[in-house]
Image (cartoon, rainbow, N blue to C red; front, top):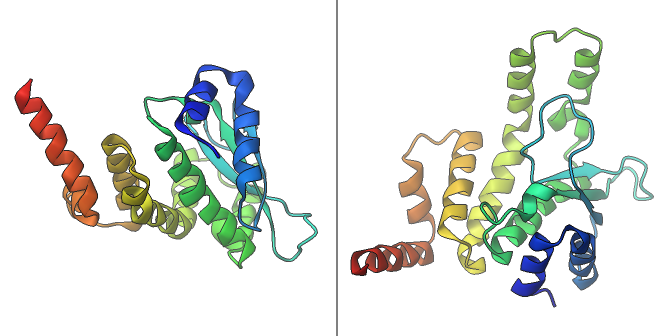
Length: 209
């Protein structure tokens, strides 16, 4: 059983991080998750991923072809308690977001259609010399799967008792990919009643100080 102390220890000591992820895997993951691996930094990418927390990589040659199991790669940023203040925040990103992408790959969301392998080939051939255009194209490809993953996080944030700052961050990202135009803070607060209770408690504590 993973607990808050396990997470905080992994945040403090990088040498404990893979063991921490192994415990999560051992506790049970969906059939479409092959492994969860720690890496200090993302591997080579077309774009700057220095701020990445986690990524999902389909294993194209897995023994479940044509379905693809995935490897979840977790980076050092994921253990920064400024963003993932607690275990609940971390697990929400891992299970509710990255596992969603793994599920998408396994149950028919093709890499080519949604994550642009043809686009990457064109980019490497120099047919997308303008990085701004390339980033816009990739963003458009990712809108549907990212919106689904962030929506799944919003649906589970209250149950997990995530931090308010984290909840708002997820709300802003969902708004970015889903295209909603409403005030994001209001949208997030209205999405789950438990969060409104937290906000009330935080406001009340501030008044008492």
